[in-house]
Structures are given as C-alpha cells and as structure tokens.
Length: 128
Image (cartoon, rainbow, N blue to C red; front, top):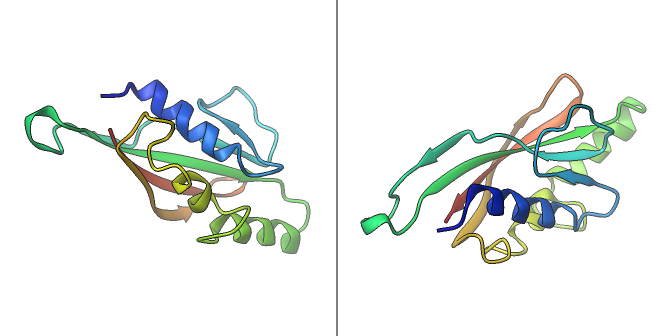
C-alpha cells in the first residue's frame, strides 16, 4: 500500500497539469491565489477490501481564488468546477487514476462551498 505522502504528491502532480494554478501537497503558511491545496485528511477507512487489500482516504482539495471582481472570480471558480476541460479539477485529478502508481483508484466525489476567500473544496476518494 502507498504512503499518504505519496498520495498527496500524486494529487499535487495532477493539479499541476492545470495551467496557471499553483498546487501544494501541504497547507503553507501563506497563499497566493489561485492555488490548490491538498489539505489534511478528512477520513481514512482501513480495510476497505478483504485481507488488508486497500484503505480508502477522503482527501479535501481546497482551491482559493483571488477576488479581482465578482464576475471574473466566479467565472474562474466555474471553470474549476466543470466536469471536463483544461481547468477542470475533476478531469485533472482523474486523468491518472493511479496517481503515478500511488493508488488503485481516485475520483472526485463532490465539491462544496469553500472558504473565507472565494473558493471551493473538492472531496477526493483515493483507494490505495
């Protein structure tokens, strides 16, 4: 089974495929939007398959957007929320379902209202 750090690294690598988006596999002391952070774990369910075959991680990806003006900022959030396309968080992460060999599967399962900045939190399920 892969380590949690290799899963975080794999998620960061996938997020870096989006042009103009900075990605970090940890939460830094300060941010410069637009940035996607692989946040600390939401949950870890051990033994999701028989015989210690796999664990299931729920990992939040938090995307922060600058508030340039309401329309521009919302358009940027909408592009990240799209289920496909060059700026889709879902498409970028699911573009390599093994995260470079760190996982058996990965999928973006939901997105929720973000943060005090304009942003959104994507909930990612990784089975490793």
